[in-house]
Length: 545
Image (cartoon, rainbow, N blue to C red; front, side):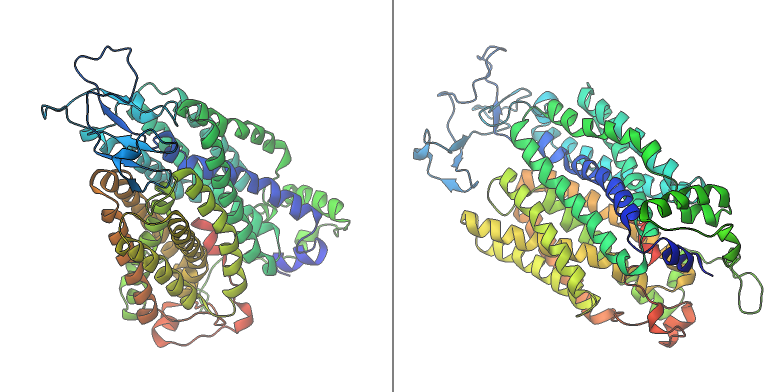
């Protein structure tokens, strides 16, 4: 008997025990989500100007009659006449980086009317130092990339629970260090540390959740995890409105994670992992507790009923050759799929995180846009859940990319003075579409690669996606702020539309088709497995979130 058959015969596919444990492991993803995008508000763009040579050091008054305004904007970030100065909701701006005599300045005065204290103000991340802002956010994704490679291996070697708890400890330590870091480079290192913990918490939560429930609930488990990630963004936006001192905001974000230290006693090791390690007595303790909660009874020495599938062999009985990343490029059809998928992942990651980091790029208030865009992710995830096995992965992916790209390009064509309702609508469609695409590609990508190299392929996909997130950091937090939103909107829009076209032209539909086992099946366009064996979300997706 296979472990799946045994587990769900006696324990059930989604009993009370599974629901409790799945809720517990999902809760930390809320904090992970807040850490991932906290820099958006810790470094929120606030008006500032040069400190005049005649101004005393203690002077912090932003508005001065000694300088001329360069422009004024309303709450929707739309330009208004300078004559509107003084009216409610109107913010006027000065030349940021030069004095009236055209000399550069090294000290600035910030507008504190809406934001109390930012990291930008603390470390003068202004003008020719604005690259630091993007570098700090990029550090998070560099850490996340390293964490993906580290925790994936550790999770298989020392167990899910230990990795999960270790990642929580790293996150808590680095999160408090972020709040008190005296230098920007130390802040960036701590950000990289929280990024490093991200896969250890989020991915292991997905893994534990999917290993607990039956096959028909695994797709829903992935969607629910994404829902908690979206809720984290909603909470972050709300907290940022009320806590406008970046240090206090970081403490507020970090503190709930202290509750997760109790998980050492509340969350058991994965029974599936324990069985794979032949640690049956420990697995029995976990499953007996699950059976008691679910009102079930396990047979004695149940592990003796399990199939021994620990050795992978070929049909001739000899061990199969371990494939490497190079094998993804050796045959034409697999090479085509690999190249297209390796383009899709960084583009999707870039657009998703770019729009999250600069939620007001299409116009509107960054706080309201951020919260609204996060809320939009929730129905987007459920729409994908309902449609992905009906209209297919390929059309969801291409359609979502095209909608996101089209909204961005239309916004650019409409100019700078986009009405608030239109800006929010465009942001909602863009963020909702790219969220759906992100969810769909976790299902679609594993189905494009054969079993013999699927984990390797998905590991590369996860790594290369971080390249897109790093690019998004520099584009949204440096280039767009220095040179204008057009330098973010046009590249994002064009690449999203290009990715949609490439999906339709070069990739096959996989809905309702069995998972390919070998490279030969991919190249011959044939399959040897019956279609009922395919699951919408394969185990390989667990490695990559």
